[in-house]
Length: 596
Image 1 (spheres, rainbow, N blue to C red):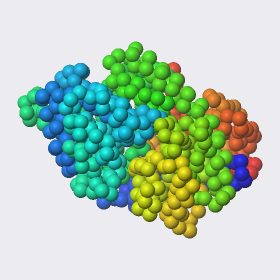
Image 2 (cartoon, rainbow, N blue to C red):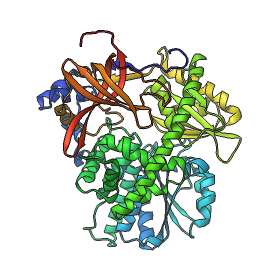
Image 3 (tube, rainbow, N blue to C red):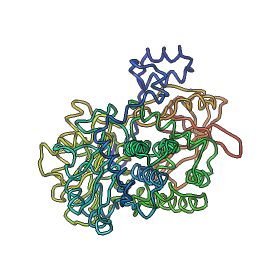
Image 4 (cartoon, one colour):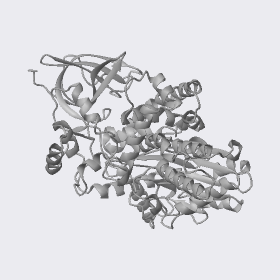
């Protein structure tokens, strides 16, 4: 690590490429840059390469292999048929919000009366993650007798709370994708549809919560059609794939190993571009967006605004925005979401500056698994993003802890990690080795959350570091950025070629290239953490933008006239019908050579 006060720059490492995949891609007519990118992301040619890049409906896994899906669909169909009250209960993030919209709009399309349906999202700050006791305390008095409750993106680890719902006379259908406790799925639930259940025959364990919810609603539609309650011509839930695409990308679900996720996102983006809802048109107006939506728009523009609301307060506005019937209403809502996102960025910037100092102290003390207590005033709604920033800067799996809202004796934490450490597996290991240390915990491969007694934070820090150290062995964590090699003459034609391989995301990373450039000009923009750059190489000029290049009160990492080897991705900026190339700077290696 570098000197205290400055986080290390990521090491640029050329991504290894599979020569057989590269040759196969060229033989199929992919361009050289496309073949290079595919060879860095695909290693298995047991299936045709074209089906790995652009799967067809025939490549999807059969939903009937999901455990309890028929039971869940039957219970929901019964509720629809008998006009029983239905409650939608989902997580407060973008995966939960899109799940909520999928369920609500499916029921609406089937003619279920609005007064028959109620909706609830957990409050991150006051109720925490999952179906918590605080959440049940709020919701239970509002439920009508005999309500059929369907969860999405939560519920698999909430037996005690689900037992309270069942004891009150309600039916509970859990749809989720998070880890299942060692003791199994919650027995008080009437159905638990989750692809990661030990008894699940569903091959793909990487689908998002919104995808699971979509498959359950598809099975419910089929049951209603078979019962003669809906005509066979009723639109399929595939009309809601745009929501599923947003939730899948927002939750960082794999787009490399999962053909299901790739197809869902591809089809969802097609819907967003060809048959946009009022919400997407309103978002386009807010962003002055021209050109088609792509996966990076979802990740960095749409999902951040939906998530921001849930980080600061009641997340229901994100659902209402998604379900808005007209663009005027949707635009009013997205303006409020945008204001929430600006507030979130301000809070996050301050917390990240504090976390960097704490992380330096932990690293100086020899930690490689970082467990950071962020202090009494820390905002739990943004400590997950802060944890991501620390992983990016230090390369170490990180837990960020903040005070729990309703219990002065507890801390709540968000976890982000590297490819080496699997969050859910590591939490399970801690629970096995240090019984009782964690009050609650859950997550998936790349992220998770937990609660711990404040008096046990030091013990958790030790346990986390031990487990991380075991996974790394003799290796030392460091911030690393994989790049796809040199690209000394980037052009708009490269943007078009790379766009044909969409979607990009976890497991199918967006392409990043390297090249040596002189910094001709630079200026801070936005909240002063981003930089606008003018770059030159020989007679070639380029524009660049570097997001989160620095802290607001810190100097830029480069100076005018400096020569640097930059890591960058390619972007096409369209304004008033004119499209130009923009380099999005991802990292830097200084180069003292003078001849460019």
